[in-house]
Figure 1 (cartoon, helix red, strand yellow):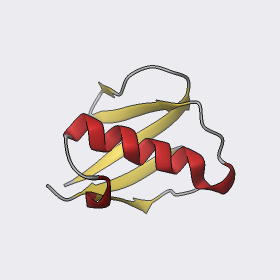
Figure 2 (cartoon, one colour; figure 1 turned 180 degrees about the horizontal axis):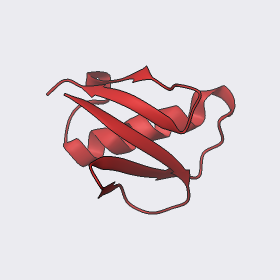
Figure 3 (cartoon, rainbow, N blue to C red; figure 1 turned 45 degrees about the vertical axis):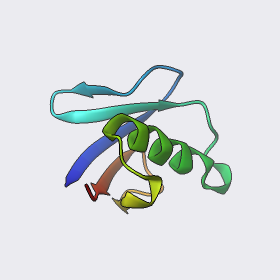
Length: 70
């Protein structure tokens, strides 16, 4: 399953707004920390392993396409 994700700064739970998933993180972009946190939050939200989630597009942008293997 592929989903569109928007990453924003903050400390709120994962939300679904207008067909897109919004993930909030306080981690910095440096050393890929924000992406790792986004993947961790999505794994918890969808109840899947972290290894089942990968960023398909937008690794350096706030708008990402993420693939989740269920």
